[in-house]
Length: 142
Image (spheres, rainbow, N blue to C red):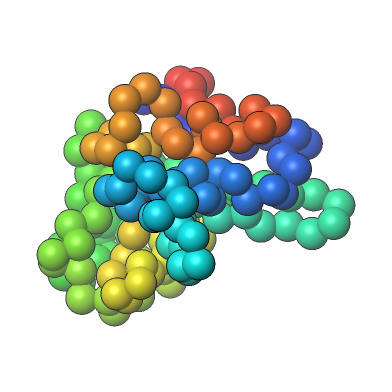
């Protein structure tokens, strides 16, 4: 299965992956209208300091503890990709507590969201990969 990998040596910490992710998941056609003067809720997050930066996103674990820990049954795994059913999520934050990678975060309504590899909103590679100016984020099978 293809996954997102990050080369932290190449990451500039520019946050463009976050903006491209938020736009790709906004459901809008115009980035300016979708994001200007609004808080963004990306499904990938840049962490780090002045020395090193890296993107954090879902690793789509083989045996995901977030799926088994979800009290509402909102998380499921299909063909290796972990999905969030936002209609089922009750916002209990259990998945955030158990994820060893810090890959889940609430959206503007307190409902959990995470990287789903842009499988439902764009063709080809994920938006964060397309939007990375230094090619620090790649989408490949290893």
